[in-house]
Image (tube, rainbow, N blue to C red; front, side):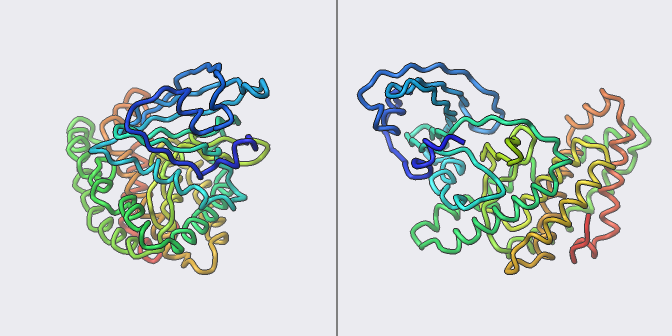
Length: 358
């Protein structure tokens, strides 16, 4: 981490009525550069998040020291002049300053215009992790992150309530997204069953998840709130000197304790063979249960974990893109194995509701 940037973390939000040049934005965020010309080399980075205009890596020669400062600029377009939840999160980022399990890129600040939110953060380097291998480490980090953010949200005054209300996972603009509505994928599964007898009749069986998810959702909504990252993909994590770095808060929400564990495990389930998934799942759940603070009910937290796991896993395993991918790679027996695993959870509805491992 660049210690020179940390004093600015989470403290600066600027509002502008017009588009500006990059140099103008940087001079506004770093007053020591205000009257000096800047040498900047920029490169576009990959991004597939909704409403992201671009993500850019900037290498800036500090005119005072001659040293290179590396930053990331993310531009997020606004709908109806409403800022993104990621920009709102970064304006409150000091909630995670006490973290010891995760490291986060320092945030220089956020610039808001009527059309976009510009987020400037430190550029970080590290080695991409092997996702099944970091299950215990992630469990510790997520438990700490949930505790810190829950305590922060609990201390907020009434005037900040609208900010966090709009970021809540249970707002309709989140829940109506296709990724949280697996039933839209069932016609494709029905067509698959007509052409491949191994999958015949499965679409009808998967419909039984709808009332189960409704019950789990209702229970989760009453749980303690926290900030949830919701996107534990390999591209968003780095390992540096044994420390986990977590980046990219595009999917951030005011979630519930347990949600991030479900997001991580569902990502593993989508991409890994069953033995790897099952081993990492057990390691994560065992560590997470032990790491939760005493004021969180571990059974409720694991119930919430299962809810998000099912919500994500059902959509991503049933959607047409996944079916096509498994067909192209000739891995349809593995896909059927994953379907059997998910359907097996229906036979354990009562255990899921009372928090037994998946």
